[in-house]
Length: 266
Length: 226
Image 1 (cartoon, rainbow over the protein chains, first blue to last red):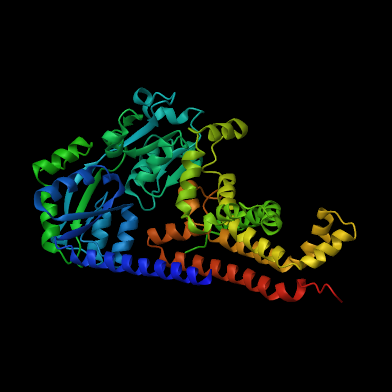
Image 2: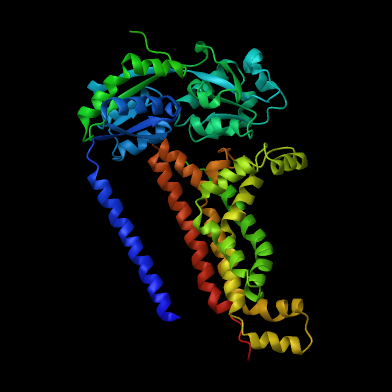
């Protein structure tokens, strides 16, 4: 019995080693250029489509990493190996430029984000017509927003609530998502009855028919001017700059518009 | 740079609640694992050990979705309590109980198994019921294992992050635990605050564990033949 056990163990170990060697050699062999993109969570729908199109056209592989803009800023300032950073505001890119981690010359505003108040499709709240007033409904026990401390869409939600003088009334019912995508997930799963999410998320094909929403008027919050920048420590600056250039093309801007982003004037 | 003491109190409450509840629920499970002779015992042991291997995000996902308002279980919970499991202290407790289950049950079961079977047999021949044997013989001889299990559960829950991040909603005084507070501060570039909070957490956990391990062997060891 012992001899068989030793054989089995030996085979298992050999299999693990083989798998390890195979994986590392496969990784080393991949020849095509690859850029790693850090992107704000609100882009998780639009940027995936844009990156797919870009990959098909140019062969450059794009690896996407989505998180709150504040979280990504922290990672970048501490040496994360990203090539490009798409923020949901201009503040974080400027912070990174000031810290010397990004090239000011490559900074540009790629889109303007929009905030919406979202409720699930089967909700009794008539958010499309009543708008912000649904928050006063007693059935709304939890309202999801992104964490204003490090997510631009969270700050926009906070500003909106203050603009409508509702912040003090509802602050006890707020639940904070790590980023705008998690905030959306809190409402989608029904755990929060309403939430402030990105229009890019609400209007995406995946959310078709799952919810109803009210676009927050632009005057209620400071405009979500979203900036992108190439990072100083990138080892693929040429490809990164090329991708940012592609973001200005008609094909890319069409996709952005499809997902509810507006383009900055000029 | 002020430390958020409210989150410390909340985290301590959570850790103590989970440790206490797991003693009550963990002892029967551990007893069964240690003394049962069913052939399929290994399956139960595997289930109990699952939380060690599964990422906390799996648990968080299930609490959010599988126990959420769209599921039958979730709806039953809402009809009972009036609100969802997510975003509440109770939700955190339940998630943490599941997540810390092996840290309590495994030391308990190990210490039960280590009790000399001859003593249990002797107790039975002297007419003691299994329950009486448990409280008079097995439990006193297993106290070091019990204390270890409780200490591990306490420490593990103090450091709980993944489940809280998934289902907590970051509500101050309700679900904003110390680990979330540290994470928030780092993301807001408040490194000084994060450092201070992390050091206090480290000191508290180390202090508790040091006392428990230091006192454990000497104070509780029962010499059955004196």
